Length: 209
Image 1 (cartoon, rainbow, N blue to C red):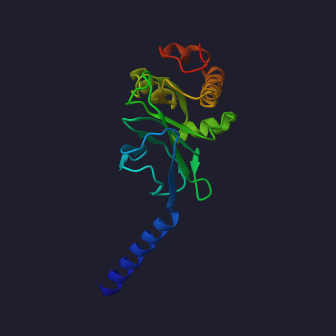
Image 2: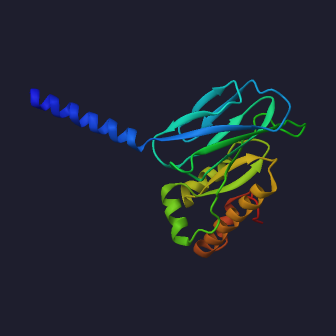
């Protein structure tokens, strides 16, 4: 009995140690492009729905369970906040940048402006099929809120391709990348299913008619 207990302890220790070895420490940094003092905001790790209240525009670190693809967002009542991060987080690419800009009359305080900085828009069909299998291939759309239309929920169930929805105000580079991403997915679907898939989406992503 004692040997079994010791074996269990050693096994649990190994599991905990292995989990710790796989963890990635990422750093969240701020760029305040305004003269206004930052006092409050909320940072979210979307994959786990973990929310962190932030009261100062100072760098802080977060722990992620392992390297891989993550989505992050940041919202503040007083600023328009853009969140930029690597498509894959690892020990070398582990910086998440939050850029604070002036809120305008067109800004929506509930808007989520988050962009993978190195979005790959030159995937092969095999790579896209792998992403579909992993559930990590997405159209990108921008609108006045962050809600996902019901048609896209059904679409992902059928085709394995989801939707990331951002707010309507974006920078030109992000708009270009989003358009290229959507056209790449559209070309893949056209080759595999013809044009019928398009009739299932009333709201079309950027670059698709």
